[in-house]
Amino acid sequence: DQALGEIARIMHEHLGHFTAIDIGANVGDSAALICKYHNIPVLCIEGCSEFMPYLKLNATKIGTHIQIVNCFVGTQSGFIDNKLMYVKNGTANMSNYFRSKETDKKHALNNIKTLAEILLRNKSFENAALIKIDTDGYDFLIILHSLNCFKKNMPILFFEYDPSYKGNNEAESAINALWKIGYRHFLIYDNFGNFLIALHDTNSFCDINAYLAANRKTKQVIYYFDVCAISHEKFEVFEKIRNYELYNSN
Image (tube, rainbow, N blue to C red; front, top):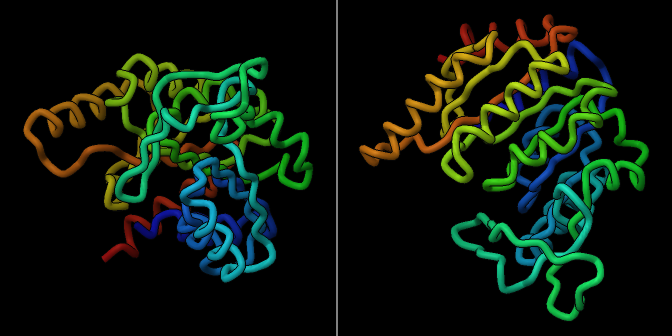
């Protein structure tokens, strides 16, 4: 799955120096891809305590341009109960449960903060040009509650597209919300990182949803897509990424 590294390379060629944010950084694999060609400053946000030792170790290997925030990104501040965290095969997810600030923190696994709150404490990343989101089911909610952050700089977004967690309505709401604030171009990759198609409208995501549903029903291997969303103002970057995928993937 090399797409993210090539996207970062093309962005650097076109935009020059930029910063990036990795929401759901896991053990630092995406940060390593983003920094494959250039030492791009990356803010790695990860709340799972099981991943944190590996993320810290890998960050030292990638370089001093990596910063780590130990929390989850959510729709409001609070805490998540340790009992609700499920970790298996290198991924982690949690039940749709929220502990408020007023509850006993004794069993809290870690903080939950909004992206806006995190950026207030990490000013050097508030104009990040690339934001990757992979949170096993919370991607669409994070997008919907971070639109004001995106509006400021219209970063290129690279996120997991899997409606199976919460249903097609939430997925469609997130895509429509991105369209409304100016995202017009979408590059679709399968779960192996293979480029599939470029979309320039929101209606085509209904077809994408149907394809994923058919795969789940027949137990095929494509369970989700990755989406690279690009604003109209960055159309030249979109064209360069698409041309790379069309002519250099063989």
